[in-house]
Image 1 (cartoon, rainbow, N blue to C red):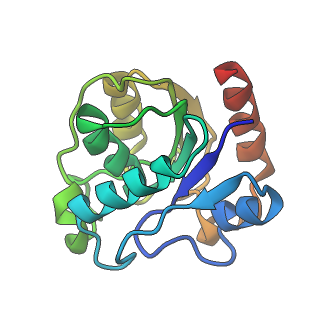
Image 2 (cartoon, helix red, strand yellow; image 1 turned 90 degrees about the vertical axis):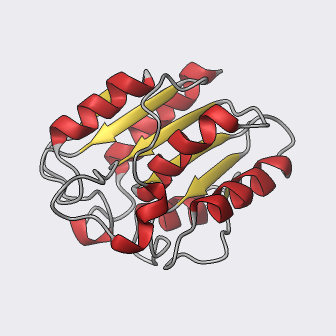
Length: 178
């Protein structure tokens, strides 16, 4: 059984976020820990990701939300460690109308194929990234693309609870990785 590392976005995933709820239900999941959830610095988040991967017994699966999707895109070309795959949810658009100024170092992620299997889940009404941006990101990164309809930013504010639909999508992705 593979290790699973959750990578929340800006602010970390709070008590009602599906990532937090999934971690409670699955002891194989653990969260990476950057120095700050609220003042993200790309180099710090990359170092935190590599620290967490180094603790894995086997190449892990990454579950990223929002800003952490951009983290993975920045990390992939310089990665020093193997992962089994990446499950990317609600990728934000740094050129969109709403983007967080404190996350400037994450802007302009590389637009190249990721060197591992990936799946990108997008909502049709995400305020932090258009559906077209999500689809373009999936194409650029070579990710399988999944449209979950109008789910906002696919976070606690979306009222999804432990997001059973997402858990099922992740379960299929995980099974395909072997």
